Amino acid sequence: MRRKFTQELINWCESGARKPLVVYGARQVGKTYGITDFAKEYCGLGNFVEVDFERNKTINRIFKRTLDPLEIVRYLEGYYDVKIKQNETLIFFDEIQRCPEALNSLKYFAQDIERGKSHYRVICAGSLLGVSYRLNPEDGGLSTAEWEDATYPVGKDRQLFVYPLDFEEYLWANNKTLLADIIRDCYDKNQSLDEMSHQEALDYYHRYLIIGGMPEAVKSDLQGDDYKDIQRTILNGYELDITRYIRSKSDKEKTKLTYAAIPRQLGKENKRFFYAGVQPEARGRDYRGSVQWLCDARMAIACLRSQIGSEPLVSTEIPNFFKLYLNDVGLLSYILGAKEANYDAFEHRFHGALTENYIAQSLITKSQDFSGRLHYWVAGENSRSAEIDFLITTDYGNVPIEVKSGLNTASKSLNSFIKIYRPQISYRLSQKNLGFDPERRIKSVPLYAAFCLSEIINGREKTH
Image 1 (cartoon, one colour):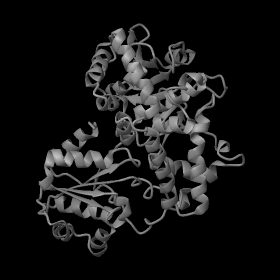
Image 2 (cartoon, helix red, strand yellow):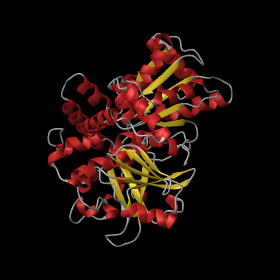
Image 3 (tube, one colour):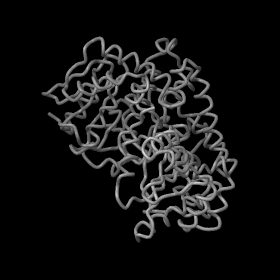
Image 4 (cartoon, helix red, strand yellow):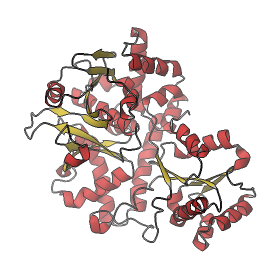
């Protein structure tokens, strides 16, 4: 499948004095497939060595004996019977979380590059790389297995975050590249799509809400197989990761319960995550570590409330006021029992939950600077206060994004935000066609065009 992060791999590979590249991402988002496909196409089979620490545990022994890059390379050459050439051969450490010493060795590969001693190209990937190095039991985190004696090579690597397919990549997978190009072109020109293309895009969008962006689920559906089997397997894998990497039995159970509570709480009118929604007597101090673990593992997406729309969002966060979304809307649909056949039978709140999760997933994939969390805005403490679903920081300041699951785009909340803060541009996402209100500077964006928001996030979109 064509993936956007392939270009990031090419840029890294062509850069000079490259640091080892660490690819983060949850289970089954396509890290391994994307890297190996890139390596075979870009580097050639003769210049690619894949070391899988999950399947081949005997290879771990070399890293327990030495962290010297030259010795490691010599061992790999003998083990795989291949010549590893500097600046040519790509070394891929897959599932590196199974060998903490290998992750530690990256700083020595980087140091040799800095000193001109060697220039080996190293990429590594794993499903829980960001978790154990960020959480500390003394700071309210969870005690995780296997990692206590490992050292993360801070500053000695480049990082790339990979997520499920966004909707544009989903269209590519369905051989709808032309439709994706039409959407982008119309978005850039503030022009409506022709009605036939608009309806076709909406149809694919509704299908995407059910299938999601997990590559294997998309592939299974394209082949006419039951994609729900893949979704079930992925969810079982997430539960296995919780069991495998969290040490305390009590913490394992808390994290499972926290994950299970996310779909349930998204279905409520107020989608804010409440600890009491996990267990009646639950308190933040007991479950905060579980929320952190799920977000660091990229299994969940945090969206924190920000108080003031005109100041840096992080500086006005309210830590205990947040929403949680799943990393893939297809997994949310599976858990909720949603299918194309019964989608319209559910009430508006159900549609809203899927739609907001889809937008959260779309936004988190658009920038490597989000660090795994988003923001929303509420005007006051009253339950009827104006609320903006998402607020993002851009070159034009903070920009509001109002999300509507249907055709009704009336929004007192967006009008309130505009009146208070006068942003240079605002976005309203719905099932309506593209449009632009120059007087109020509101850009109407169809839900299927959410992937185009990368233009404003990365500073490429003009506000006029």
